[in-house]
Length: 346
Image (cartoon, rainbow, N blue to C red; front, side, top):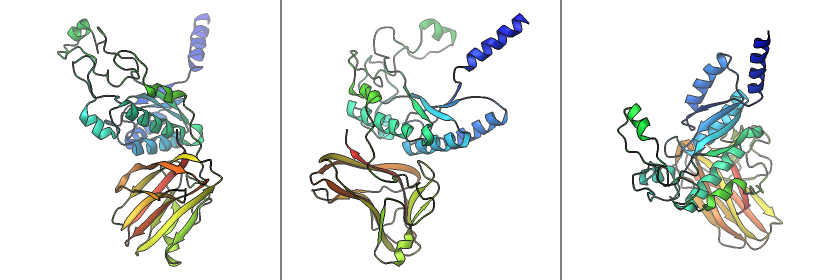
């Protein structure tokens, strides 16, 4: 009886800590739903879903965002990025080769520079913070201190011999740390403690009303009254349940917009996540009436992978701005827009 009570006590003590089940390929929603559906069916108990995510190996940021939001809701679990990294340079600290080079930079979509690493970290942090109902728990960087110093190899000679591994003993990760090659902290390190800018838009997620053609907070416009029917909110969104859709089976011009007043003068940014069929005469997000020339960013064609678009350096000088989404479309052209944010820049 004493032995059994000790064992039970140990199990209870362990259970006080949270259990994380960890998979790689963080952008692969079909993998996660297949695996966790089976785990849940077997009655396995856990608290957090952990994901590895490297944008050059594991899908787009939009695919990651969709997966995090989907699985957190599907299983009612917190989610956490337990392994990620991105290069701050293409240089090789130990001269023995790295896993992050020009191909990874191109696929990842951020420059291999301290500024590019910061941009990646901010976008990733935002995606985790935007997981609905507070289910986004955080990010672990792997490996922030793996500097190119003597002996900081992937393995040891004894380990390589034991595993019959003929690979070169080296540090293939030294350009993805949060410190430069001599140990000085990079600017990316401060992103973990950086305050998150406040989104100044109302209902940027389009979740306030469910299905509607007049989403709360947004003005709607079309070149004819009939074309107002091109504007609607529907499921699924990339963040939350709903998204904005512009679509009609006939040619149309339409937009949704918000006019913000009482702004402090300064520099602002506008971002949005989009899907786009292509084929329009023009389709873009915009910022205007802020005291400078109208700024536009065209929406890239992407039918299945959510893509983030942005306008930076919006210099507000008159205390107001109009931001919006516009499409001059041919028949059956569509765009989806979600998680629109307008905020004072970092």
